[in-house]
Each structure stands twice: as C-alpha cells, then as structure tokens.
Length: 95
Image 1 (cartoon, rainbow, N blue to C red):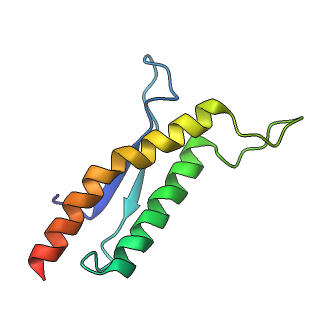
Image 2: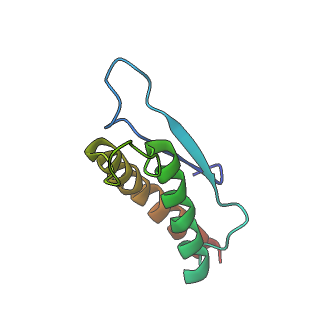
C-alpha cells in the first residue's frame, strides 16, 4: 500500500448504475504495529462506514435502521479488513 489511506467502497447499497460512494480513512498518524494503533484504525473505519452508509440517519416513525444501511455498513467494514491486514503486516515488518 503506497498511501496511508484506505478507501471504503460501499457498492452493495447503491444501484449498479450509480457510482459507489467512498470515504478515505487516514492512518499515517497511527502506529499499526501496536494493538492501540490497530484499534484506533478500526474505530475510524467503522465511523466512516456509519457516515457514508447513513447508519445514524433518522427515519420518521421508527428507530430501526434500514436493512440497506446495515448491509452497506457490514460490507464496508468487511471490505476494509484485507486492506487493514496488509497495512498492519507492512507496519509490523517495517518495525
């Protein structure tokens, strides 16, 4: 990974004809060779996924999140797992 950014792609909740929204998650300020740095990155990824997937948007008449938002969030966090693992391996090997 050449850049200290992860892009979270959220294609599952978006139709195939429109581009999937993405959000960049910076981690150049984190030490990914430590559990604390990895935990902070996971929190940032989850926060970005919540924002882009609309997990905190209120729907009139219900407090239940839409299944599309939940699916989007789960896929976004899941898709970032491989990129995080690669970044952690790189940080660990550089230490």
